[in-house]
Amino acid sequence: MTCGNMMITEVYTVPAGMTVRAALKELQRRHVRSMPVIDGEGEYLGMFRFREMVRRVLPSSAGIPGGLQSLSFMADDVQALADKLGALEKHAVEEVMCTTLPALSPGSPFEEGFLQSYLHDSPLPVVGADGKLLGIFSKQRAMMELIKRIKE
Amino acid sequence: MSAGAGEAVTGQMVPWLAQAGATPLGVSTAILVITYAFIVSERVNRVVAALLGAGLMVGLGILNQDAAIRGVDFNTLALLTGMMIIVGVAKNSGMFEYVAIKAAQAVKADPRRLLAALALVTAVLSAMLDNVTTVMLVIPVTLLLAERLKLPLYPFLFSQIFASNIGGAATLIGDPPNIMIGSATGLPFMAFIENVALPSFICFFVTTVIFDLMWGRRMTAAEEDRKNVMNFRAREMIKDVPLLRKSLFCIFLALAGFTAGHSHGYEPGSVALFCAALLLLLDGLGHNAEEQGERVHKAFGTVEWNTIFFFIGLFIVVYGVESTGLLELFAHRLVELTKGNILATGMVVIWSSAILSAIVDNIPFVATMIPTIKAMGPTLGGDAALEPLWWCLSLGACLGGNGSLVGASANLIVAGFAERSGNRISFMRFMKLAFPLMLVTIVISSAYAWLFYF
Image 1 (cartoon, one colour):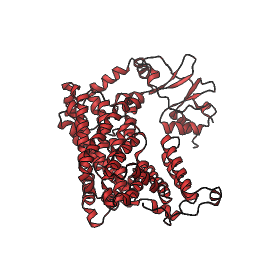
Image 2 (tube, rainbow over the protein chains, first blue to last red):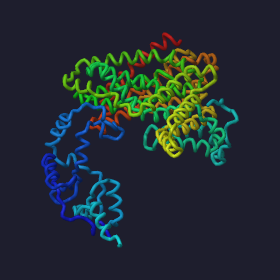
Image 3 (cartoon, chains in turn red, green):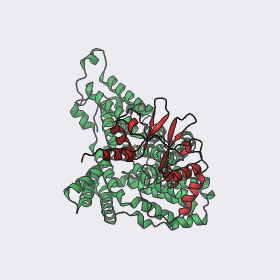
């Protein structure tokens, strides 16, 4: 069993130039937490995720390595966070997408996809040799496959 | 770490080198130059370079293993390790972040006074703890405050870099150069307070006024944003009150030990390690053996072992050149250059330390200068006559770290935080202001040295 056999092929994607505002609406509409970002040729560029948006909206000192581990002391100031999000909305998704996730190849073993999606806590792109997005490896989908194979 | 030339500390130089006509002096000098060249160029990690240099000193027979071990100043290593453990445990209480938030609230989140208050907190903590730890704990709070008050971040980061190096210069335990000087000379904690704390305070005051004139007086924040900061519940920063009490007890015990221990024969390294062990004991009370083990493991994980091993490598490299007589030769040349005038020698030491420490890491420089200055003793009138030179070395090396972003480890830590938060500090932009300002602090220190040391 390879990642290519296991991947989801009907994938919702967002173009690199789409605004953050529009991409956030897409996430909401599709009920997903991340979407691959592709260029005009269908090449995979990165992943647009709620997670990155949360990090960018949080105080900059809290979302970075070595930064604050707790904000329990802060006074309630939701508006400040909303203002930060507002300032980000006009940016293109390629400016805020995650580019550090590993891309799986369709021939990668199932175990590798399972491990990497666990380590990065994210669905991972399955990308062909030409750089084009082929599908998404999701650990939920992989777990379902394992459940099906449990011997009674 | 002292050996005169010709003392029986050297190993047998490998035959092929001896047959090729190489002398121990030449070989050890070449190892030192190559090691330092790699450290300065940053092409090889500095720890690796220092350890390889040390390995070559032994491998090529300049030192035997016993001699190499004798060259390591374990008092310095113990003091560094002990303080790192204490801070590593104490920081889990949240006390340092609490102090920074309280300082902001004490000045009513007024931007102008906040700039000075955060610099003061950084300077005081740097005097009591190591600079790197201090900025790692204070800078995240600074980022938050500047963001909340919608203030430019750069003045805060810049002033805190200066404060950390100036504060570190004020005490024996504040900065690695002082730890090394204190350990090599036996000068007690209080001697540092009496001799370098006041010029450090003057430098802090002067730079704070300059920062206020440049930035502070022009800063304003909206009333609403200030109110928001005033509403921060600083008390919430304290995550573990019992640990806070234990940590404060051990930190004050260590400070008392540094202050009074010298007259009873207790070196700072022993005091720091004892207090670290005591804090680990107190921290583990009430936990089972497995949990205690985990806590100790975590505490030791906060020790910067790369720094400790960097010191080990350097001590051996420097001991190698010391034992072959290079540093004695260098010391004689320096004394000849200044015609044995101790004031002139002091000025050479303070200015060369400052400028070199701004460009390269001050730790290798100080490691080399310590035996060099010691070797000047007989010419300049004995060990007691050297004391002013130690203060010149301390001020020059510690304050010189402000001259560029690579001048001190704390500067790089601040730059790293700035970059991760999207506020990159450019090397040249920093140096354009930092280098002249560093020179101002060296002029102040030189004047102070001239008036009070000589």
